[in-house]
Amino acid sequence: APAKGKPVKDEAEEEEQPRFEIASKNDYQLNQALNLLKGLQIMQSK
Image 1 (cartoon, rainbow, N blue to C red):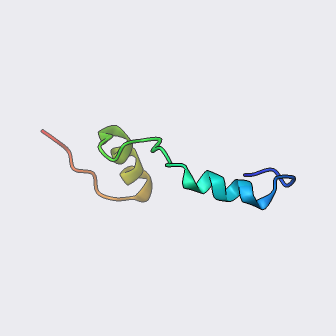
Image 2: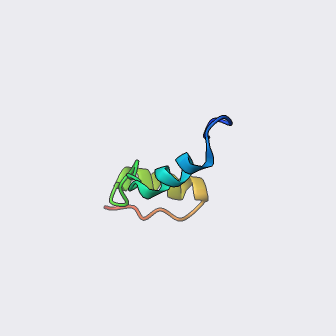
């Protein structure tokens, strides 16, 4: 969360910067964990 003392223009500057993804959509283990938390059925590979 931005500090309360910051001027409004700083927020606009931050939005212009490209946001990096913390985790890739191709991260299999992360997606399985998220599906488990969401209660979705997990496909098991044999």
